[in-house]
Each structure stands twice: as C-alpha cells, then as structure tokens.
Image 1 (tube, rainbow, N blue to C red):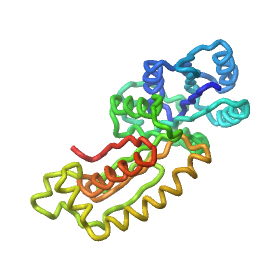
Image 2 (cartoon, rainbow, N blue to C red):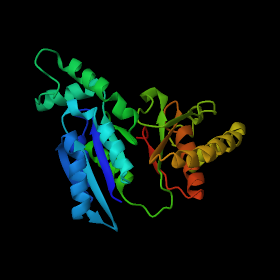
Image 3 (cartoon, one colour):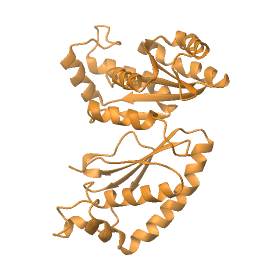
Length: 287
C-alpha cells in the first residue's frame, strides 16, 4: 500500500515550499499536477517502485491549476477505494498576506483574468477550494509563520515516528490578544484560571518556568479542569483515530499566551505521552 500525500490550497500559501521540504525528506514529488493525471501518476509510481523507502512508498502530488482543484476530492475517493493511504494537506493564508506576497513577487494570480482586482481573485479561489479544505487531513495557515517554521511543521507531520499512535497530535499554547489559531481542531480557553501576570515576581517568567507552573497547577480549579478535559480527550482521541483522522491539533489559550496556556499545554503533553501519543508541543506567543 502506497503512502500518498496530496498538497492543495490557496495560490501563494506555500505549496511549492512544502513540496521542496518533502522532496528533501525523501518523498517522490510531482509538482503542479493536473487533477486528471493524479490517478495515472500514482499508479505509475506505485507499480514502478518510485519513491519506495522504509518498506513502503511515499508519493506526493501537488495539485496544479486552481480551476481543477475542486475535482480532486473525486480522485482521492477513487484512490482510497483502491486501498491506497491518502492524506490531504491544505495550505492557506489570509487575503491581506496573499496580496502582500503577490505584490512582492509581481506574479499573476491564476484566477486573475485582468478584469478584477487581486483580492477578488483570491476570495474566488478561497470559495472554490472550501469543499477541499473541509475534507483535508491537515490544514496549515502560513500567514504568520516563516519558511523555516513551515519546514518544521512539515517535517513533524510527515516524518515517520517510532510511536505506536497512528494519529499525529500537536498541542500549542496561544494568547487570545494575538488571535485564535486558524489551523487547529480543538480550542480550550483557560482564562478562568488566576493569571500569574498579576503576581509581580512571576510576570517576567513563562509557563515553562517552575514557579509559574507550580502557581498554575496549585490553583483550586486546575486539577478538576485537567481531570475533566483529559477524560474528554480520552474519549475523543481513539474516536478520531477510528474515523481515520491522521492529525489532531489542540490549542490552549489564555490572555497573552505566556503563563497559564503554556503550563497547561505542557501538562497535557505529559499526560498524552502516557497514553502512547507523541504530541508536538509549541508555544506560539512566547518571545
């Protein structure tokens, strides 16, 4: 059975960068591929052994022209019916960021026919790809991450790990002041816990520091919250896996993303490792 990754998403959101990173990781990559050729390329790759490694084949196809991308779901379903393992990576970014990127490169948007402004073309593409995004396994918003951070996300998601869990997991902390992460599955707000920011000696520290961690964990509501949230996750994690979900991302938010969310995210990661998962932990708003 082949391990197949389909990369799709908004033009300018980083599809080519993602393909380059996967190629560096040993995947056989076909870029800018018309949807009509996906089935033929994959069958050719599987039968010829192209991209084989570690006992299985790794093939990546980057979907080409935007007008064709809406048909990619049909191709994916057909390939899954043939027994292939198919995962879909969707890359997106805000319209403002995409306008900035196109302005700096002077490239023409694929849906820009010369009769409309760039923002209209971007929003039209976003609307066309909404059904594809809805069925994607992993969504990465590249608005505020660097190329190096994107590489880390790609590497973490598509490197074969030694853990026994078939579903990759990620936990990130964030601050609501900087906005909710757009590419996560579950969001939990821990602003009900007392804020270490108002404790003068704790203010310059973060949830990674023991005094802050101890302060957060010793609050009366923390233990009960973790008990109930972990019970919920203990139900959800295997349920998501049984439904074939390849990735699950959990976000923990507080006001500034420095203290409470960081400490709780780290605590959850320890608990999940005890269940056999290997969550990637990141703290978006730490300096």
